[in-house]
Amino acid sequence: MAVKIRLARHGAKKKPFYRIVVANSESPRDGRYLENVGTYDPKDTPTRVTLKTERVQYWLGKGATPTDTVKTLLIKEGVLGRKN
Image 1: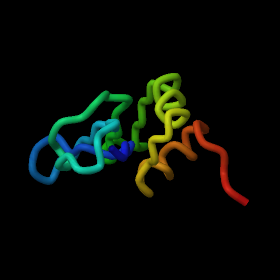
Image 2: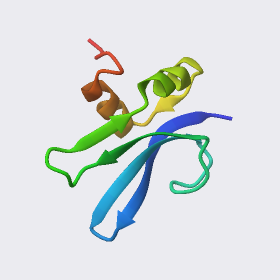
Image 3: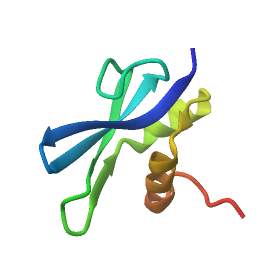
Image 4: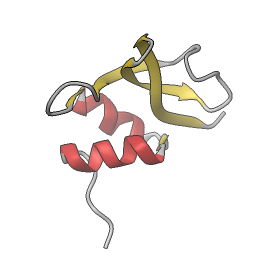
């Protein structure tokens, strides 16, 4: 079972709101997940990201791979270091 840290879309039409979740890679985008580790609100000015950093670190340590978008958010929040 491959585990990914990815976004699950919520909110109304044209007003997206995302949860940052840890899920099995075979689960649907908005389907079942293992744990909710944060939120991302792109419509807020400036964009708002809230994270449970300890839980994100835990899952990264267990081998979970973030998607490209989540990786960018984690780097901006200082949870992941930048690659040279």
